[in-house]
Length: 204
Image: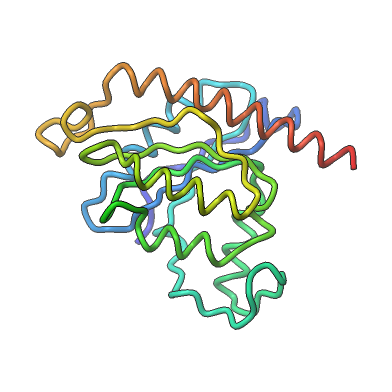
């Protein structure tokens, strides 16, 4: 399954060394809303000139259940699909995770994709856009815990989209004013953290 979201062309931020941020589509479920939400976040992010943003769709990286015999912290990846995923994720300085909430947590496909890697996530920054009946607040909280163990700095502002307020008849995506404003605030924090960490890494 290929994503219909097209990545942006290189912009001024990329040319000047600004951070690269992946907007990760965290669901592969048929009929998912994550793709529309990620496209919306990307449209808002593309107006900025302080970073480069690209959508990364888990549907384009069909990973099996974790099948690496060595723990990811060892850095020894044996399978071609792991190397491809590691190469993609390692290219970014920060991430924005777009996630629904399934049974009070994140989709299994997203947890599995995170579990495959270690060094590629380590030391980066992350923001969150959750959607669901209650804005996927429990899923985002679990993501914060998971990524904290990978030394990922999670920014404070979370974008919470509710089915009642941001999806017409619980279907068509119609974001309201508050989450739209919060995307801008969240991206401010993500870019600032990514810039700070990227600069610190270069000075070591």
